[in-house]
Length: 285
Image 1 (cartoon, rainbow, N blue to C red):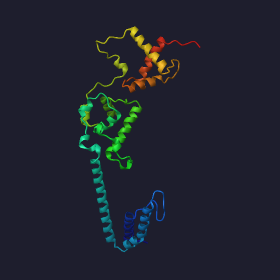
Image 2: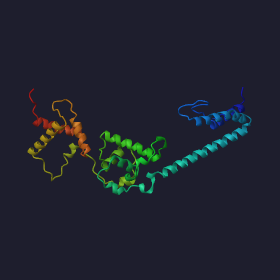
Image 3: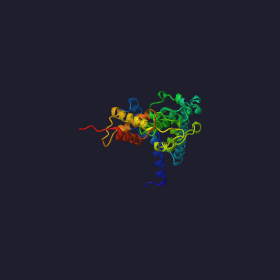
Image 4: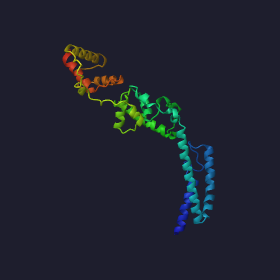
């Protein structure tokens, strides 16, 4: 039966052995595809030294072992602190963290639209013109904090565009609205530089908010536009008026969005139905 002191000595010895002789993936004398022969030889030499080191530790008193463990832990903390300093230094030396990488918020806010990459860079308070991803490391294990954040935000923006939540050509105020909806942080200077705009209203509400001096379309003009809509849908989008489901409305809405024109599928469908009801005649079988 081990005495408490013996059990404590055993634990201290195990701790020191694990620190100085960490378990290897290959093991002594085993060659794997991931371990070079030189590295395996180094492991074998170290493994051969382990019994002698353990014998030396066994000869130490409990107090001596405790002191050695304390020194080892202090050494580990120093290494961790040094690694942290080196990581911060690497971050500071990143090209996108140089003094000229900060954006002119007022200049960018004046632009009517931004690209997806510009949105990502500006959301991180960086000048899009200074972001050169080809200079960054490819390995995800060696990425800096900035590169990690850029990758995450790039993924968010691309998914929002694929989901038609954002357009490919992104208006600054639309970006702010989207960022707030998902609690994405935005630099205060950029937020203040973007002009305030009226909240986006559905097309149905906009129809009732016409300026007093706007003239309503004449019946003949409206009919002409409806004919154009129907003709283009039939010719360019394979629109089938008698089909229960049609992809034409989705394709039209998507193409409009690519050109910066916002219109819901419901609105497209409404005008197609109106044009069909008025002007389409089913051909006899």
